[in-house]
Image (cartoon, rainbow over all chains, first blue to last red; front, top):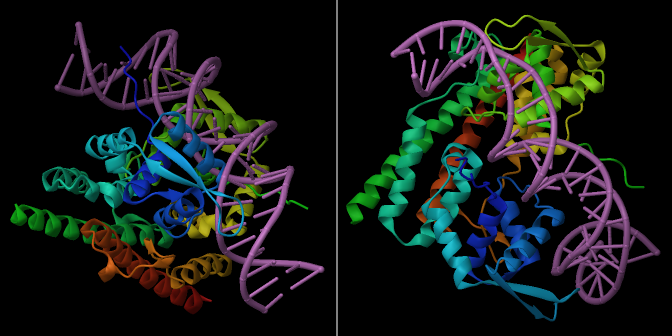
Length: 185
Length: 185
DNA sequence: GCTAGCATGTAAACGGTTACATGATTAG
DNA sequence: CTAATCATGTAACCGTTTACATGCTAGC
């Protein structure tokens, strides 16, 4: 038994996703990924370079050295066919956490358009919408989720208020976009 | 040179925070933390138990064994004075990422009330508000952040739309709460 | 003369995920 | 009788963080 559960590896997905748009060197990737992760949370070199190395070893990307404008020579990275296939696979078969977790889902959303397959894209949005419809609260007492007004702490109430507004706008967008996608077919 | 940068260790903060409210055993903590992390993302045992062990070794909490209702005997965990001091320190001196990063900030927000110090609490909210006011975009072209209408990809536009709605509601709440805190003084 | 930006990497330490291991009680 | 919930832990693996290491160019 015991089937292998894949790791999420968001960084890998982001690298594949951006390289699919155009070849790029590591330093450039860094900027793109930093922007992605929300508000400029830098990717550390110690995460990025080993990740690239792993992908190169796995044959998902190739590296071509060109003289650097400025400092060290750049290594321009390009996806191989295997890399493009892996990206498509990751986008088509997301893990449950990638639907559930905000950050993961947004990374998926960033690149899902690369599939150029409205039906598949709609499937992802529908999964997210279903997840959001089964709402989840943040705080518990006696094992039961607390409603906002039952929480004495103003900061926790605030968190729920913001989460609620976010959920609402996300649901709206998901519904609109699903309608658009259906209409375009 | 090279001063030591502390790790974020969100899990540690959450453990200290919840134990500060009342003594609890690990399994109970698990439920609380899972709710916290957004929509029920379970904490794995392999993360939780070692984290507790580290805190116990560091003298931040003590464990008392009581016969378990159900299965294994429970280990009821309580904060020591050092544990409470560490929690206060973490809340009072947050890292920059803990202001910047959504999830980190929300964990901070969950427990900041424990300080019972409106001025200090307001300081945290003000820092977050300042961060949000220096807005950040998600996508770049030629090194410059793209405005929503300049993005062709509907999914990326959607992400910005949701992020914008979230930012707006968070700003509103922060301003209101800062006013409340100021008025109460 | 110095700092920021460009550009690439490595190594130790740490912590989280996954899977393994065990076992009792309760609800369907 | 079987799955879910309660309850605690360990160990291998792997990826991230932090810090170390190097060096050039442009602007102040």
